[in-house]
Image 1 (cartoon, helix red, strand yellow):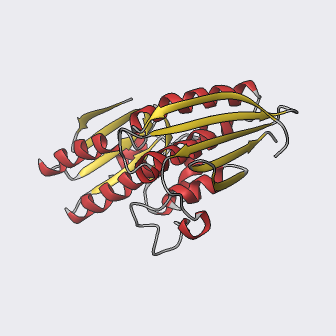
Image 2 (cartoon, helix red, strand yellow):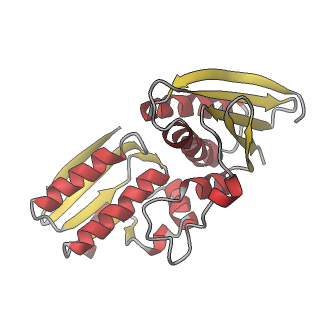
Image 3 (cartoon, chains in turn red, yellow):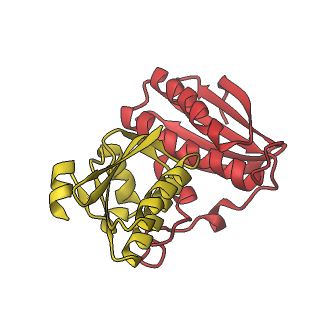
Length: 142
Length: 110
């Protein structure tokens, strides 16, 4: 990855009630980068909420003693925001865990939309192990 | 974020203020189920004051819709902004729910 400037680096307790606060901070970064309004109001908050809730509930098994690290960085041109969400879990395989929630058999299900939505809403979603399980969301202007 | 429930005629109207996400979806579910248990059948959720909804919030709407239908009732939605419409279209949930552009039209549609 090209050289990036870190604009946000925080560790939160594994608690779903922390999600809104983190999302607001990242939305602020988006607005400062002049990323399109709909990406700031929908794509980024929903994709990040999914990544955080997966990290808290699945990665960390809803264990309040564990933590989630959130790191946001911006490229030199200032038109790309990368958000890394890292939990303490063993990780998962993104392609095989993603289900198409729009098929006739899946649309009536209560679950299974998170990873699908994440991938619909941001430019790129990656998953890798980096001293923990990290999901990386890349958002681009334009 | 908060949920306000009031009756308008025979219809239970729920206003969702703020986000409908993993941290509060259970509260909405319980409030609606409490009304269903009291015998209410017609429900309208109004999203005029809603920011965004995540997958667990969408899941709760699907779950409530099923439970209400099982009791012979109906759950309808109103006032999705453009962002929320996009979300429903992406997940094809716009095919599952009757969605109105205003509360008045939604109330008349029951």
